[in-house]
Image (cartoon, rainbow over all chains, first blue to last red; front, side, top):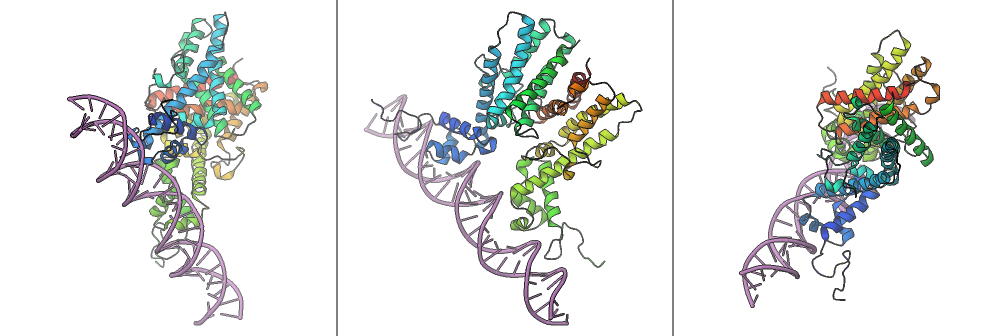
Length: 216
Length: 216
DNA sequence: CTCCTCATGTGTACGGTGTCCACACTGTCA
DNA sequence: TGACAGTGTGGACACCGTACACATGAGGAG
């Protein structure tokens, strides 16, 4: 019991110990309910119990904090997709390919519906990324959502269900459809659709993508 | 020459004359370069040459101004789509249906690329609309973009190219794909794609939607 | 024509935010 | 032990949205 206040939220000493992570966590909390605009620097410091300027020792400015929160949100999305992707179990390679493709799509939309604030935040900051394997944005498997779609499509081609002429840039087609649906469901004209109907539309969108890939 | 300063931008008298429209126009200008966040009440009044509080005689608060700007942006989008839609001329009903569907999709993405700030603004405010025929959001034809997609799909069904079992909610599928693509192109990972490539991807997305609708 | 009235624009002020500056504390290493 | 560098604090500034009281002047009632 040498440390009277070991918890990072309430510090006993002048120094905080892990202020950067604490601010990040607070920022994620703000983004969760409220979206990117709710990520307010002063409020984050207030929640951590620290003066506003303390944040500037760890983040260049509010934009930098928001970018970190954005990365965290993308990682959470990646995690959700990863789980659904890994949950697909089949011996048949074609069936597995289909399952993986559908898993990515449904998990993507489900995350948007379950965590609209984080979802909006994940796609807010102009991420200059090439969608490449930026580790902070990947799930437990170490692969980003974009790579997972690519994997699924590759499997589809490998198992002969999709002609390889259609392979190039196919990620963008799948991604566009699912991303657009998610946006329309949480912010757009489809907002407020009952969950059951939202899921039904999601299935139809995934059907369309799959059909577009595997159709003869 | 009875009116020394007839122009609404520089007023000679104490009263402005058409402050509401002037503020709206200034707001649209702000949104054009900068998106919804750039619609700052004080800046709009500054541009019009009026004190900040004058805005409150015409808009309840900043949110109301932003909502009006959002409506205007949607109207501009509608206009662009409308033009492309109307430019389709063919005798063959099936070909016209296809052309209409493709026109809506390409015009939608083109607007997003040409006017990213306005596009983002158009979909920013939680519009409680049912996508119905709200006149302020329609183009010259009096039909909203959503109605135009619906029209195109109806034509597709009427001309026998699309099975009518697929008709219900088909707007959402088309809309999702195109909207998602637009978002990814202006804000997301596809940002910075050269225009030629962006157009190419757009064509592929439209192809996919069309195939999904008309496939046997 | 005069005067009253009310819509419209102004001025002042307050709280909130991001951010800069100078300063205070403290863990570490010579 | 003492200096130093990293970390947190306090105060200040500009900007924003917005509430309140007030000034202005256009247009109708007498």
